[in-house]
Every structure is written in C-alpha cells, then in structure tokens.
Amino acid sequence: MDNRSEVREFLTSRRAKITPQQAGLPASGHRRVNGLRREEVAMLAGVSAEYYARMERGNLSGASEAVLDSLTRALQLDESERAHLLDLAHTASTTRRPTRRRAAQPIRAALQQLLDAMTDAPAFIRNGRLDILATNRLGKALYWPLFEAPARPVNLARYQFLNPGAAEYMTELDAQRAAAAALLRTEAGQDPYNRNLSDLIGELSTRSEPFRTLWAAHNVRLHHTGIKRFHHPAIGDLTLAFEALPVPNDPGLTLTALSAEPGTPDHDALKVLASWYATLDHNETNPPAPTSNEHSA
Image 1 (cartoon, one colour):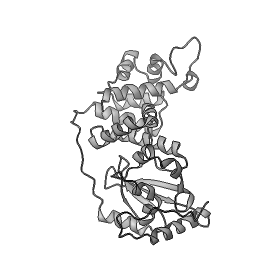
Image 2 (tube, one colour):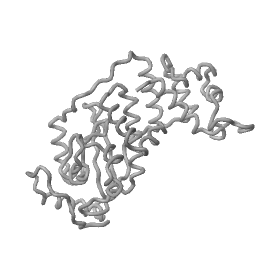
Image 3 (cartoon, helix red, strand yellow):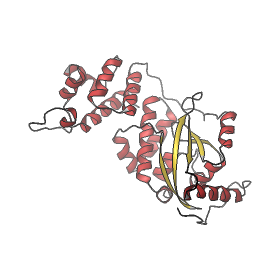
Image 4 (cartoon, one colour):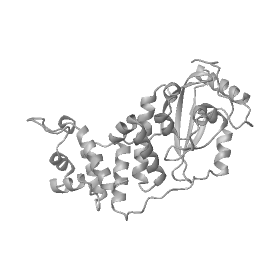
C-alpha cells in the first residue's frame, strides 16, 4: 500500500471529524471544510502551517515522537488511532520493501494444547489478516458456518462481507463488518508490505460495496473485549462475551475466547452446542450441515 496516500487520507479523515467546538475554537464565519482547517490543526499541535501541510500531503518521514504526540492531541486520536499514526510514521521513515507473500504461520503445539484445554469456552487463534488458524472443539462448533463454507483459509472478514449466510448467522453484521474493516486497516498500518493482506483487501474492495465504504473511512481499532451475538444454525441465538489476547511469543497472533455467565441461557446453550458437535462424524470430509434449532436464547 502507498504510505503517502495512507497518511494523507488518514489525517484528512481525522481532521474532518473534529468540530471547532470540540477543539475549543470559535466557529465563526463560513467554513468550506468539514471539521478543522489545516492551519487550526497546526496551531493546536504547535507546529507551523507549512509543516503540518507537508505531513497531511503524506510526508511523515522524520517526524519526531513529540510532534506525533502533539498531533495526536490536536486531532483527539484515541489509543488505536495514535498507534496507527505511529505505524504510518515508522513505515515512512524506513526503506520501502517489496510486497511479499507469506506461508501460513504455524501454530505451536503448546498453543493448540492450550486451546484444547479450554473445554467450556469457544476459543480460536487468528492472525492479523483475520484467518482462523486454530480452534478448540467448541470454537469449531461455534464458527461452524465459516468452516462449512468452501473458501480457504477460513477468514472472518471474507465470510462477513462475501458470504450470503453471514447476515443470518451474525445478527449484528454491520457492527461485525465495521470491526473487521478497522482491524484490517490497523494491520495494514503495521504490516504494509504483506502481499497476502493486500490480496485480501483487494478482493474485498472489488467484490463488496460495504467493505469499500468502510475501508474509505480509515477507521482503526484495537479489538480486545466486547460482546458477539450469533444465530447458530443448530441451536439458535447466542450472546457471548469475548476477550482477545495477543500471543506474546508469536507476534501477529491473537487468541480469542468467548464465554457466557454460568446459569444463564447462553451458558446452557454452549453445553447444547458441545453436545451437537459431538454427534457429528468427524471422520467425514464434509459433515452434514446442522438443521435442528434446539435452543433460542
């Protein structure tokens, strides 16, 4: 991806989101732009208008951390947006490398053992491209519609944007899509020369209008905790809390575990889900799709 255009579009989009009132500035006179003017951002950041204009044209090369921190405050960036800005600045200050494809990242046996030990909670490991690389049994059961789809590798973003069944399975699909696009944008800032990632973004941009709209917004996200809602084809509605934890010794990998409070219908539903999955013949290449609807929370 082109670093200069990424920087330009990110800074422009963040500037457009801040109103003069939010920045503590008077809003007098006719304004031809959404949000703040360039010179207003420069004043708030304590840099010259010429220097900020150069940055917004896409040149972050040589920008100090102090300047980037001042820019963060001026644009009222959150934690994920600040991290993305630093990633873009780092890329701008390093020698450009050719894009390259990468082999699938292997999952260490100890990580798979950890997943398998989590018998009461669906869990999986993904990479920054949102490929699901490993699961435990309950994770495979929960995300069965993704594994049933023919596309490989199993990818959360591709399923959400391109599979027609996603709208029924993921009951808050718009929110899930927004999160996926923001995570991919964050990953692109961290790893701009990853050809596999660029190929996925290109595929989604070509085939999905919702993705193109979300991608153009330049939103980024650190996805650590929250709620996910599903309508599973075998057991019906599920509402689960999730925690997403980076794997320290395996950069780029994230372990996500989902759970429900004991004694709730959703907790009982996980037990039903485990029982349903245990009935499948795992020796078959393509086990039959679930058809029952045993639970509705």
